[in-house]
Length: 372
Image (tube, rainbow, N blue to C red; front, side, top):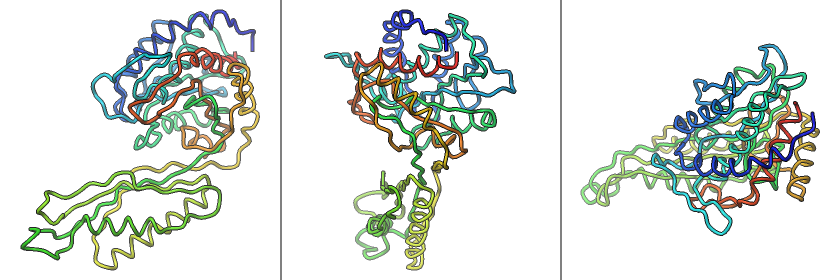
């Protein structure tokens, strides 16, 4: 790595702040990141990012030094947010904070990556001994099911030697993948008029009983395993015995064995209810892999040192569900550090600390420019 011109990086902090306030207001529900993708591509091209493009998964990709055959280092941050808004997201700047749904998860991290990408393009820097992919990827959140990352790994995975995705706060680095299975569970019953057909099977009641039974499950004591019912819906009116009801259900684990045990328990309980005559349909809507044994300690140490140098604290090494799940499941060293500090992720009161943006920009610069 050549000496980093920190004065040049620092001089970009105002531009990065302006970029963040613009980008974070652009709506980007998972699977609908078109507006953000186009904005990011146009911004990169304005900086001279030759070869930048949007792929069919709505990933914005800036390849640098990619010969089509050489090793690749991938750096990502996701564009999608958990909020369904299709109108501009509400922004407020107050008391040294930027408030906006999705501003920390993951827009501020995407801005750190974009700003470094702009620096590389303007300076016409070339990586040493490898190629580098800088990616603003789609579909990390929820039912996005890591679609953007899966596409990157399908297209480039055989050549990827290291993988970093910037996501979350700087006080933690995800080094271990938490896998999950997610289901849409539908219950159908005969239903009818609440008075005339009193006593007929009610889909909501049956689903409620199923939920209660699922919450009696004991999780395996191997690693950490959890489960959750996230949404419930159904019925027609107050005086109608519900014919339909459904829920979204997930379980997670930081180990393959934990996932397998939970899947077996879930299947057994569903079959138990079917044997009682309950009509249940199951749809898998999410499937995130756990990792395999892979040594990512050197990569994690490099990221931890960068956080320590620019934030002044040492981040915790944790497990989590991120875009790293895909490369870690393939045996590729991967980590997920953050380039911001804030709170309220996945709520409409989410915010980032403005003073945390420049240190985060420096963390991203140090990790990416390590290869230049």
